[in-house]
Length: 376
Ligand code: AOF
Ligand code: ZN
Image 1 (cartoon, rainbow, N blue to C red):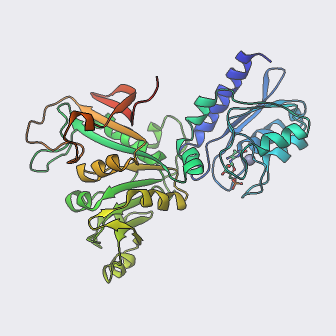
Image 2: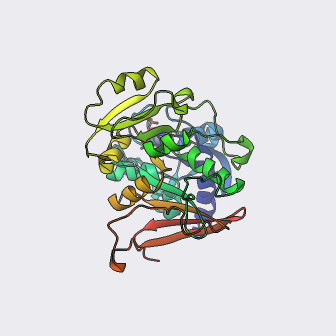
Image 3: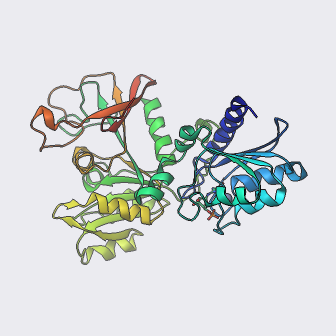
């Protein structure tokens, strides 16, 4: 088995895993390819929590041909009884000869034990094949398992001169249709969309996924799926009970600081969930928010908010990735900026970023960046 072969079949397993992008929530995306004499005899991916794992789907396709086969799996096979039986048992019982794994499962219930069990059963295990590509499939699942918080993206749209709204507040639309569709993809893969009460009061947004299924690059998406959860940060509980979000399918959580008093009942009867979190006066503690969301098994969070919340999230260090759309127009010197960061005064206080991706989306530019200086 050459390195080239390993890369070839693992790359296919990664593409299969990606088929679960909009459906596996809260489980990771996983793909599996079974080969015999370099010919694929079975393949599969994990579609939905509670349903069979990638390995079981691939084994079902291969049937008897799994005996003596090599399994390429993007995540270490599980060895625990969760909602489904252990994949290690399935692979051993099917008589697989060799298992090629891209990365260890960060879930503490697995964490290397799956690989150890396969080896104990006499199966040859090769690990870390296309590891960084496999890691990129599951930034949220990995971060939640390792750090107890979700992976957080913050999406922003601006004019080329860095403005997000005219001084009057008018902001529709900054970016073009293609960029707005791209945002729908970001929403569709997120488990929660977080915004601030200021945005709700100004725009009464839906924070919903409205997408033409044919535009999702062939990846499955179910419109009836109750996701992502909408989360409104509303320290003083000023959320109107007739907000548009409450009339849409799916969950809406309103996060406040301290006892919300009678306002709670009005929101709860509108189908809202009111959650109290620690904070100081007007500000919710964003670390506590992320711990709370991880407790809800939320892997990926999208912040879509104005400069106050975006600035607070950046300053609190909870953002993993910025997705900034820059539109080819100038909004002028009185327009609003992206981040409210009053504490920045000196050049040495600047927030350093590393740009990880840059591309055109229609007529707009999409910049993806991470806070901090990353090694190249
Ligand atoms: C695999 N293959 O395709 C997936 C794995 O509740 P369960 O039974 O679905 O188990 C969920 C856990 O199993 C999940 O947290 C992760 O550790 C692992 N996911 N493992 O071998 C798969 N989806
Ligand atoms: Zn499994």
